[in-house]
Length: 284
Image (cartoon, rainbow, N blue to C red; front, side, top):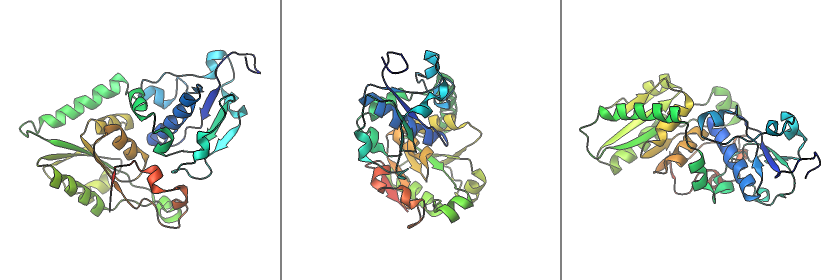
């Protein structure tokens, strides 16, 4: 029984913000904190993650309480390492409700639960059905290619403010072409499925060859689901491509210079190895 008169396990609140990749990082972090301490991660039925994935919601409204009660819990911030790791967060009390503010984008927080998280983050049936339908339709056009290796390519382009003022680096076209050539040299027959919300830039800068296919017009969760159906991943920058690589579990190539040295963005990394998954391949 707690001070508001309800017998329950303590809860973990995470402030979800940003796009799908950011929200998935926040979920993985919050779920793991709650899981290790026998607590509940607060997640509403209306949240986009419960719309996209088969997650079980848990919310204060289930107990007829104010949805804003998370704001009454002790607030724990990420100390500025949005893309890093703070080991102090591994040693928090389990007898108090906790609320977290930040992005907590390090695989280290949930390294012991990642297989469990992959099982939990199952796409809703309608999303997976649409992704598989498109994926198989694309493959049907290459039905004579036995031993075809599919590579998902996610191209993220930051806006000028993010690059000039904040220090986020866009992966240059040379990196993307180098990464594609890396797989071409590894496998006899490749098919690159290319995803981006900046298709104008992509069409202008990435050569359209017989082994490439541009995937356009989908929602973010359908794109992500399609990326996870491929064998391997090329990400540029950002958390959407990161999650695609992590969920796919093939070879993942990433751009090795995500931040301008000395920039504000570079200060958000405790260490690149805390953010980028072990075994992934850095390129430039």
